[in-house]
Length: 569
Image (tube, rainbow, N blue to C red; front, side):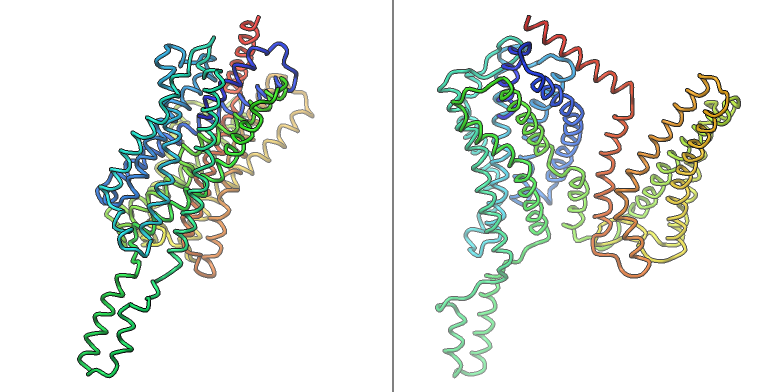
């Protein structure tokens, strides 16, 4: 719904492009520059993340829980939004062509699916919160409503209901110029804004209310019996014989146990997932809710060109946040959370057949990655310091070095297995080497981290000093230029390694703590969450440091601006 509203702003700005101020031009170009790489990352992570969630929640053990069906349906509609909305928006950004105008039917279909999908994803999140409140309720009849068949029935009715409620959306969409935009009819816009406002603000109240109710039910351990409860019968029956007392007490405990809320591991983890979904939803959608409220209040105001440009820029930020929510919110962490959820639900206390092998391959992969950066730095060093020795830079030698590093990686990780240091950690649900002071731990730190990291820094400092010395002597311009270019490549490698080191600080901290005492619970989960986030920043750094790719993006932006001016003329 927000995505389609942005088309109105964008269409208005295209019509007044020539008269737009410098502020409007900069905001438009900035929004495009931000959205292009960001939406690609969001789409890829969101697509694979939601597919992974569907695979997990489609398993038989998960399908028996009513809440799993709501998570499953939410992920399905997130894929629809990302494919029909985000992907087409990315194509529009890069190609300068809105493929939704290939036909009026497709224009209406896309608007309909984006709006309904966006509303249903929020609606099912509300149902998840309500379901978790019901499963923790003290009322037995309410808890009995949380069944698989009941959830399936609610999902079918909800989808039909919202598709019928939003039937007016495609009616008002038409192709105007080079965009598929909603109608400017006052009544249609008024209904559009009202639905947008309700679907944005209403879920906030539902989620907050039922999250607090669920939390209240969890914190309340048991039901306090009323005066008519069987416990009152005990005090009235104290004068009876011993046998009657034992019978009454047994009956009391049997009845009282019904009022205890015994949560399974599955319920506990789904409640935790529900709370995390609610928190991330509120954080990512507060700007959208405030922006919808602002648009509704100022809908009758006459706005200047700069005002429209600012609204369009803010709306672009809101859209990106909305797609971030549809990308399933915490994808850097969610892959790991949902995966460990499977083991947690099974209460696995022992490793499976491939657990030790996965732990071994984890160390092999880490060794290969770190030493690949080291090999790149060595290659640049040979290129600058020994430019005439082409043998070391030949393809055959480099392939040999890479193959040798892989072989060494498999060999150097063997002590972790043979010494029995790789063990199954129940809390973290992974096979890793426990963090404690031992010869293998010190060996692991030195070989996997200290040698490659310090080697890269040492080579970089040596090359900086060497290039400075070259400037003091008579050196050909081509040789100096090549040396500076190779030094720049090493500098980029140092940046990538620095990102890994920065986000690896929690892991380093836990290793240091392990030398003296037991690390905190879930320390590996925490550490690997930071490492997963570092991969995103590494991708951004690689994009920023790749000049041909940046030149291609700039060329597309300049080409788009030129095409826009010609269209207005």
